[in-house]
Amino acid sequence: MERYRAEVGIRQTLVLPDGRTLAYRVFGDPEGFPVLTCHGGLMSGLDAETGDELARERGIALISPDRPGIGGTSLRPGHGTLDWAQSDVTALLDHLGASGVDMTRFGVTGWSEGGQYALAVARVHAHRVTRVVIVAGALPLDEPGTLAALNGTDRRLAWLSERTPWIARGVFGAMRTAVRLAPALAVRASGRALDSSDARLLRSRITWFSRAVGEGLADTRGAVEEYNAFVGAWGFAPSEVSVPVVVHQGAADRLVPAAWAHELAGRLPDARVRLYPDEGHFIVVTRRAEVLDEFAADAASRAAP
Image (cartoon, rainbow, N blue to C red; front, top):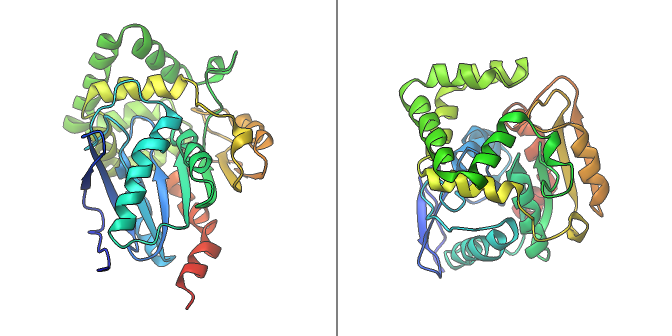
């Protein structure tokens, strides 16, 4: 079989069994150890772009798909966390395998909302996933009292998405216009809800943030569905995830309570927490090297003769 050659950073697509389109990008070393990366909420698969050089240095291929209704992936009304791993991810793995990529073993990482999707992939594909790295992930938000501990902005957007989706779409559309037409102002506004380290990071990454969010909000219906899935049932319990998990968490995170990292790890059969005392939600950028280093042994094993 001819060796698959991914165009690094270029959107690629495949047709899913249900006729929809799935879009994904590859960053880092396209012939390296594959790590599926699950993007954050209000973002897109472009959020992995900041890890391109670091992944390449480590012999890692970051495979970053857009979820349903996000970026270049077709909408799938009512999609959930577990069924995404069962359907879209399975089709992507089959597509990559048929293209010559060795997907018999791969890693998974997920940032923020993407954390629950990363765990779902490990739940469905446990025999193939080496380990999971969650960055600032949430607990199941359908549990009593949990949603109330989430930040106010996400709670309001989740409420609007569930109760008045047409209003939510208007809000998401306004956000999309802001990041496209006035990205610096949009970053400044976003920074008000974050700790100082996150606000500084965003000011230094305006282009990246505006592009990733712009694609994440390309279809406002997709943003509504994302929020419904975010606060909905995962479809599995953390205790059902059998592979090793590492949870990276910033103690100054204002979007996801830092205490959730230890609680989530306590529910997983094999997990540990790595805490960053003075950092916030965007450790996905500032601590990307540490996140990727979790897959060092896997990458070294793949590279060995």
